[in-house]
Image (cartoon, rainbow, N blue to C red; front, side, top):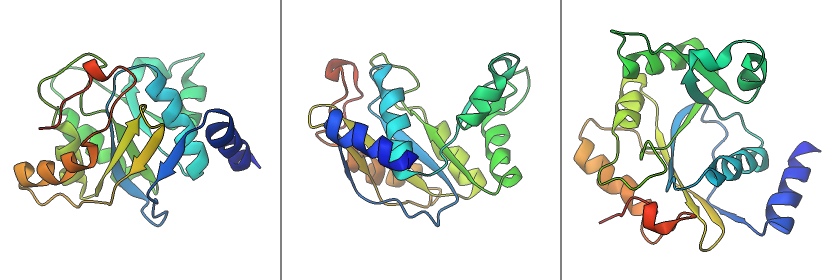
Length: 184
């Protein structure tokens, strides 16, 4: 019932479409979601997750998970991240995959809603370390389309793998296109 409500709101009321399919046998992966230009991206992501009817996770600083919001953030797929000194964030996040039966991590490789010239590569090294595929997700506000790419198992050749992943975002515009990372 909940999935039908998400679908009705997302497709009928909001007018969005989804292109591509998610293989729900993939229990662990890293979703890279771009472009990230607005706080609206979060809500489109929530509706996408609801339409897919699949668990999708995110990480946040551990302080977010204290009372009174901790329960809600965990319910929404959040996992606390200890960002105290000396801890390798890639290894810390990658270790979350081994601790859970299902962990599909959504990240924005731009790292901010502001214009960036380079993507952050932590998502790549997290997937490589955890030995999980990367799935490109494009939020195209100009066409109101969420596009799911094919899983890519990182090879260790980041330049080659990034070139493949970036192809998924050609012609995609965020809510504020001037703030989005430009695919060359």
